[in-house]
Length: 578
Ligand code: HC1
Ligand code: SF4
Image (tube, rainbow, N blue to C red; front, side, top):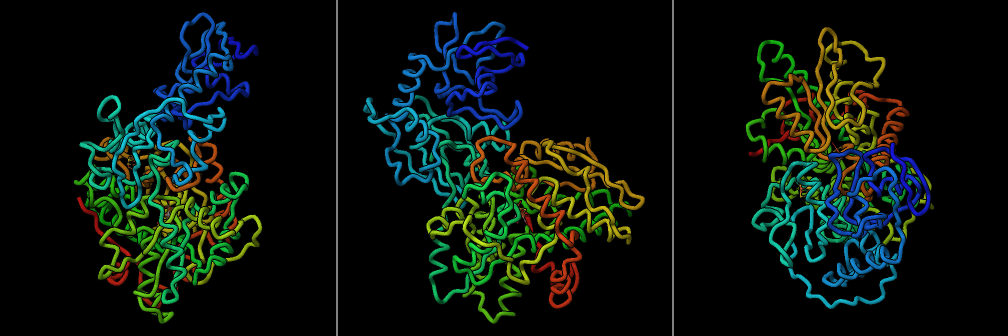
């Protein structure tokens, strides 16, 4: 520990602390912009490019960026001298000099850190007349890049390169021409981007935002010729409340269902239900591949989960020789769409073309997934429109629907009834835990008494655990965050790690930390609280194994015969493309 004095207050802090962290421990919040720390040293952007967090250090001539300056014994820091405040304000004014002034119409208005700082520092005029850059906007299926708004904070680069190891974004050009872009300034759509949306999640301004589809939903709802139904992903209910002033970690499922009914959807259903269906197919596939493996076909395992579309795009780009490893089961979003359009619509007497399936997802890659060609029939997609948790919040606010004023209600039957196994899909380790609950019973023929596989839980980026299934020690790997996924897959590929089953989610924490969730600004504690919401729902579900879901059973009896049947294959499975 070292003794430091900050704004006249003495304290002791760990040796390697930065001034920013030391000040925070005293309750002094030094304003910052580019800095980002989501709980670990390798999950950090401390390039000190913005210079908003500068402070005075006694004995040092120049102001020091507090995010990147370590403390030393006897250090004396002033965070609020006239010189510091003047410097911060000037830096802000310089940033604003070439920043577009269309704040009113910006996608980030109201949630922009630069705007917040301009308010905090009372900027009333921009003293420096600067030229403004004029990059073309880049529209991809999931993400819009508006680089005129980029302040070169490098958060997206850190996220994409260091944490996700995708390498889709980096700084190109020099001086005024400098911009963060894919290689050769190509469009995101032509790059290796996975649409994980994590760059959007950390962009402090409006340079990166989701492709906003809220008005597509409004138009569909207003069209009297269309029946419009909605499915909501597991993780949405654990975070939507944050946009309406609920404490972080509040389950707003009931209020959310009421809100969606008020918006006018003809059916309010749950992706959790389809997650149960996914488990039926995935657990069957695991069992079948395990049998082959035990009969000597070493290549039959490991099996990889395939419900995360950013992860799927990542393996297609980066491990094209491993495309026989993921389960062929479609994601719950797509299984829901396929069942809704091919079975439910028929039962309800609705033509496929007259049914609009909307999904609310914590994820931006789900927009891209919904648009993949293999998930449509004669040009009509199984899922028509996908919006994020943030977009749903905006839509509800535009429609004067305040979640806090609503009673709870229940999802519509039958595509709304789910088990505890379905809801934990939304957190890291949940998909494989759900699959294990079902596979255990199918492989051993015994009833699983304790469904909580604690060994599969936790927040470590990459973890390996062994689960006893009868005589078999099933070795399971779990990774969240694409960087961790890459490391794990490389070990599997080289033979260093021998696993039977693997779950990969592109975002830290799984879907609860998805790129379409309310901004958490690098605070992993928020992601943990959302995780607890899903675990609590699971704990309180009467049925906690997917194969015991009554409507799942009946859909096989009436339409799909059994998991992995020819019909199930046609409707619920997919292919991957290098
Ligand atoms: Fe997910 Fe999934 S859990 S991918 O994380 O398999 O997005 O929540 O909807 O499809 O169910 C996301 C969440 C979601 C799918 C499910
Ligand atoms: Fe990189 Fe993900 Fe952003 Fe694409 S969406 S640029 S992969 S961080």
